[in-house]
Image (cartoon, rainbow, N blue to C red):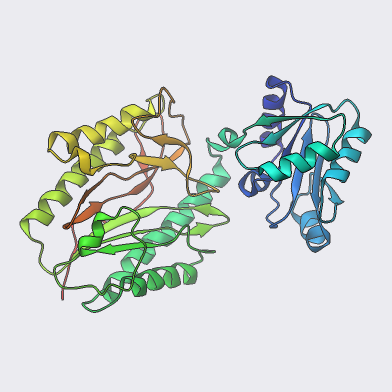
Amino acid sequence: MSERITRLRNYLQQQNLDGVMISKPENRRYFSNFTGSAGMLLVTGTTLHLLTDFRYMEQAEEQATEYQIVNAGAKYSGSLLALCQQIGGIIHVGFESDYMTYDDHCSFERAMTNIVLEPTRIDHLRMIKDSIEIYAIREAVRIADEAFTRVLPFIKPGVREADIACELEYIMRKQGSERPAFDTIVASGKRGALPHGRASDKRIAQGDMITMDFGAVYDDYHSDITRTIVLGPVNPKQREIYELVLTAQLAGIRAVAAGRMCREVDAAARKIIEDAGYGKYFGHGLGHSLGLAIHEEPRFSPSAGDILLEKNMVMTVEPGVYLPEWGGVRIEDTVLVSDQQGVVLTSSTKKLIELDC
């Protein structure tokens, strides 16, 4: 934890900030280890305070061992002002401009006299994962892989998409997942053309392609996997689109390495789909980072600019082709960035599975 605090303090110094207020749950957890649902950190160059309320005092003492814990009640502004005055020399204080609401900002500004609130963002400090984080992500990936294997016998004609989602989530919980990483996606038949087609009451039919996008959470860290299978024999069109997406996905994985630009990785996969004439049916980015949140920076997309991959970032690689009134295919792995090539953490087969009806 101390290494994380040092990096945060170095960033504050670069931004000419005397301190920062942190309330985004992922950042609060990252910099303090506190997992309660209510609280705010005040980090300065010399002090660490965690403000929370009566409900979480004991938990905060156990988890945030490097912090002084303050019972601030329902509103934190008075306690923050008192702390800043007590510490001394605290004038410019950052707030998470991508998270704090306008109303909260106005409330703090009115109450914290003689304090200048400065907009800042600190999510980028979480982009490179340490060994503890990588272990947790690997465990979340392992749980999701196990769920994919175990759910396949459950998929039969007449089963609802929602039933498959429930089964996936049940298996993951039994294997140690704290909760689903996001709303589980199960999209079959024509609904496969919906990239974020949440599981519905549609019943699986023979011949359907079924896209399942799901993930587990282990020690607050997320995994993300997508597999597309077929119920019954595969027809030529299904095989064509599947093999195209798989070829693009493997090209994207090969392009993952420290020092590569994120948009170049996206382009490596996108070009294959575009050259096959399906470019307009791949309308989202190739992937995203993940960790304490399911979607983190950086991202693989044409608009990613000159952002470079760095060793120990964790990314998804997930191209897809979505054809209206036909269906779609997406294949996704969680990938660890190394010096040479991406290390695929996901172990589930990418061979096109044909389930017996």
